[in-house]
Image (cartoon, rainbow, N blue to C red):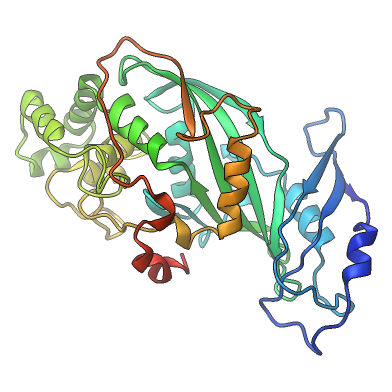
Length: 367
């Protein structure tokens, strides 16, 4: 059970009738909710707080609201969501759940979401080990009292040691932001939007997995695990395959790894171990997968600004500057120890992240 305190007196004092009806997009603004979480596998109770929630428009009368902020918090934390608990993904997500990292595109359904998250898990062929370094108090910047949809903003830092057999062997710390949409009435996560700074994506795909070892791993995966894809690409020898990968950009337009790049193929080669259905994604020649899609050919170029609110980025920048995690606030990551593999130099072509592809923002807003 999750026990909750009442909203602070400041909230109660600020709530008053504004309109005769609460519409479906009404937002609730509040400053703090304190709760006790006893879902932590029988361990000691941990008191957690939702702090400094952003003022998100006019506060409406809650007297006739179908759902309350307390229910948002109770439902979300009662679900016991953890990114690492893959065996419970069918509880956390449904067939219509979508995870989106702008530069990688959308992943729909529990199975696809798990395969996406495992790219940075220690089950990935590129990772020896990974663990949490720091996490900020979660924020609740939005809720709808009529639909029971609640957005939680999470910010955290993880440390990873990459595998020198398939990467350059670096060890690094990275910070990320995630905005999760939770449904009170249906008790699951409808959306999860992720954000990493462009410099970090350039470092990962332009340096860590842009090595001879990585390219050989991709080519060996195609030959050994993807016979149809291997045939479509002319059953080329490994040397030729590696040469073709080296000629590709590590990222599309300096930041995206869902286009015709070596970065896209390195990401999807890691997923082939979970099933041959990912084989078409590492093909040089366009190949349709089991879902009728063709990947690693053309980027969707989704703008991060279509997935987050301006205040989310401000909160993330504040978190980066907090100094509690050892992450360089400008780059969004810090190299703890350099590996012995050959290092590639990557320069982002898109330093002004908050202005990139603004014309695509409205197009992708509903993802």
